[in-house]
Length: 422
Image 1: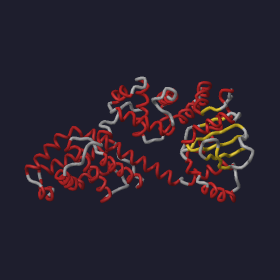
Image 2: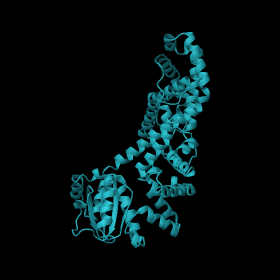
Image 3: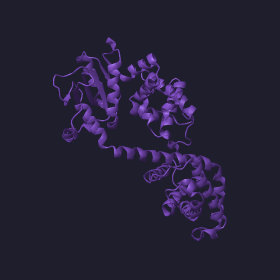
Image 4: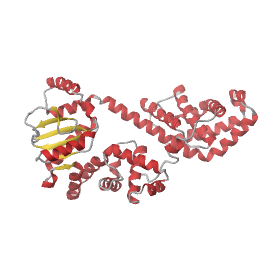
């Protein structure tokens, strides 16, 4: 984990507005004037080998417009500028180009800044600029460009993070789009066990017609033995909870898979606690594409664990932590961390690290939001937003005493075993 924070924060940036119209027009003309030279000299650093000519100049212009505007006005990036930079990252991902490193993007911004100063000092290099401004305006613009020069490295860092975020989001979206049917197909297989190939299209249509995907994010529950007498997957209502999917399965041992929507988890667990005697284990709410893997992992835990009477209905995190303590094997550590904070670890690094840093800081300050905010140099609202996002991703509230030990253990394991973050 990086141990640092983004400054200024996105929260602070959202309070800033775009450049006034005269500034915006002058900066646009400056960026247009210097882009060809910057693209020629630094373009290969910005986008090596995959984007040339006009497309490359468009990307460089977009970055220079944002960099020069922020420099002239001595302000952090606005929300709109961050969004536009994320789009640069998405475009690079769609072209299968590598995102620029901090060093290469800083080279583009620094060169653009130097070229812009030259144009301000010699307007003949950009006739269009001279047509819309006078000497006094150019003198003021030059002064503000020079005053903003110390901000260039920080701006480059912010811009690189935004581009990286957009790049990662596009890659994730493309991956999910490419595998759109695979999770549903795998889910169809796991609730109906192994089937012959000629049955697959028929079963897939049944699963789709049942709108099974609408259950997600869903909680996965597995009970030992068959919970119901019938032997075919069905959608039913258990107690006061919403409809659930029940699938009695025989392989590798008799058990029942239950899927319910995340918001129905508590009433369903209450019903199971009062109405079943078979041991059961439940995992965190998962997305559709995660369900097959979480089902297999949870089933394996149930099968390999020596459950006690107190474990008649327990969560996967408890059993996994017990297994880590008993065996201390690296794969078991990874299983536990995945169960607790897996959705956080799969985020792009620039989104993942602030959440992990927030968990570490809250731990160090005994859950104090105020002290954690001061430690990370962010607003208290930022800490609360991150806590809310952590709960959305993991189902665990970082400010709740009964949830904190599991989050703390998972984060500490990531610190001890950095390979878990790769």
